[in-house]
View 1 (cartoon, one colour):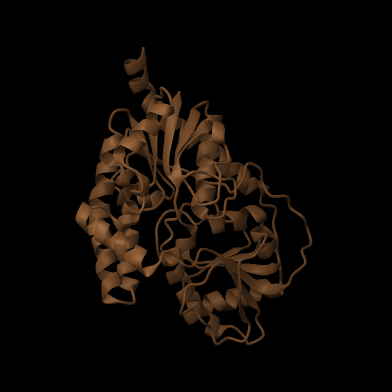
View 2 (view 1 turned 45 degrees about the vertical axis):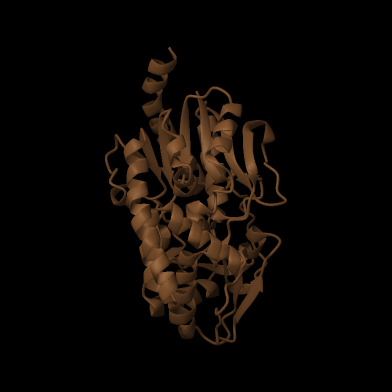
Length: 390
């Protein structure tokens, strides 16, 4: 079975974001199931596809809003309003429908599409109806847009997110209805998308790498707690604001917190132990240098890849309940609470008595469940393929 994996950004091997880590895990699982996978999409500027022999590149593009000029942002908004597309999808309209169709032809004969997330599929929605498809919903995007609207700091942002939510809800409904099968990354997302039946969807448990990280025993601890993330992404920003505003004030002054990743303007903390360190060269080494990992998601849908990585590494953690969506097994050294005071107390307790565990069992469990879910979805394409290509 030859599948065309249609995505906004093709893998470049860097695995710099949760989205890229998830894509790598899904593509690897499809190939373990015996499918030939060709990826089609854009690259980041200055980056090359990690697997050029099995990738069709539409061009280089930077779709990050925080990197765009004020003029570019206004141009995207105007184009979205005129076209009826979402703000996220219109950024990908850097090439025409004919360009995409020509690229699809270059991919050679194939049996079906894997439409990876709503952004690319929404940008070129009319082009993918000639073959059966699987839709991968990384998040319930319309619910995330509603949450973003509620947390928006300006009327303009609020109106933009509300528009995104309306359009995304109808788009997600169409993509799910047309798909032979839907993959989500969290159990609750199946019901939110209206595909809760086992005949229509399955959850993909994810991993951050092909092999479980090595359990290295005693660690060198440089700080009490460490966080790393794409804080310019609104759901992550909402969680960070909650942590800094609600949890951190209850921590003792000497509690040391290091926060890595690009920081949007306006994020500050008066706590003397908080340090914003920007980009770090080795994300795994950074989190391993902390006594405990705060898992602080309070918004969004889908799965938190930082939670999965923390559990694979066997690191102590304190998590909100939203941080555990998409996770069936919680290790013994993870404390769960949504109360800010209890969250702070649990962080101090974990930092004072560090208890690492071996995360390899968690990794094996995730891979086994991931492969089973992938096989279930591919089975839904097989009858159609046999009828069409017998």
